[in-house]
Length: 222
Length: 124
Ligand code: SF4
Ligand code: SF4
Ligand code: FES
Image (cartoon, rainbow over all chains, first blue to last red; front, side, top):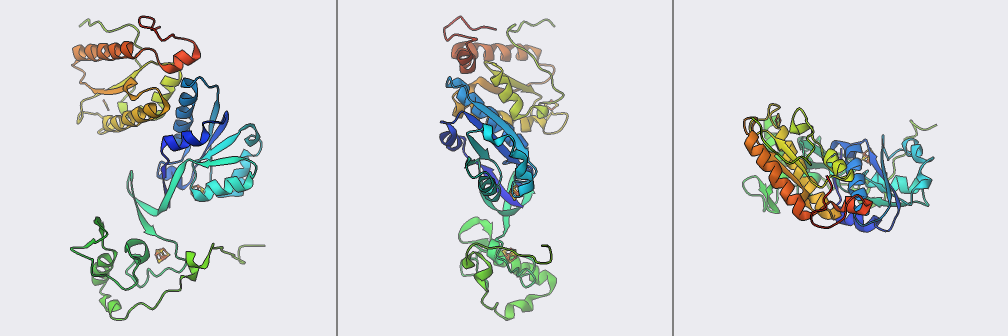
């Protein structure tokens, strides 16, 4: 899922300090799972902002809500009858949700309340790590189920590089070498022969190199 | 055991400090509390395993928030006591009340006009 972290309070305050009626909009999707932007976090941010305004002698209205998913129009539409009463919205959804909200309510000022980080997994509560870079043409079948694009610091398709030492990446001793992981996994699977043929150059047009991407599924459309 | 502790303190009982969330502490301040302490079991002795460790993190987070929004993080605190430490409880409450007296009323109450910033005029 998409992983995000709450933005520093100072940054949010700096963005909203001149407004009087604010809506904090959480998202019940990915950002709820990583505890960065669900209803719970929306309530905390709204309360913190109310404290900020009140202690400064300001009478500001700060309300909170959370939508099932901000990346879908149907759910964003649930704000249509109340969004007009607010001067600005702080969205706690991922970058997709924030933009879609701003797109749908194009006259409303919308601020991001989280920093969207990556596509990753929950290793433990509060510990999330990257697994996929959405390259648009998955090669996990060739790499023992471990993604070299997301997990090799240099995104090498034929690794490891000379900086791999003791299973760690030279970029950071905290980071396991993606290619060491691939090697070990292929060994376990008895597929080390995959190392004998170099990976052919990858078509990166399906990744960001081809510009903003779009999926058109004719089979789903009417 | 009859122990005296300041009368301007409201005690809210919860089954475990793990039940106390960030929002509960913030709402107390919104409603005009001058200070809040969370008193849980000794670390390692929580009946629900780690409730007091979660509470410790949340209190820390509330401290940061209060610092950022201008109330001051020193208005919230966490203490770990066992049920046999009634004397220590009274002492902790006195310590916190003294600290709050020193800090004066919360800026929220001053802004709302339910308190004035002057020594000795702290409304209970
Ligand atoms: S808006 Fe973002 S965080 Fe919310 S469900 Fe959609 S992808 Fe996940
Ligand atoms: S190969 Fe591409 S799609 Fe597959 S996991 Fe890696 S980045 Fe994601
Ligand atoms: S039972 Fe959890 S803190 Fe006491």
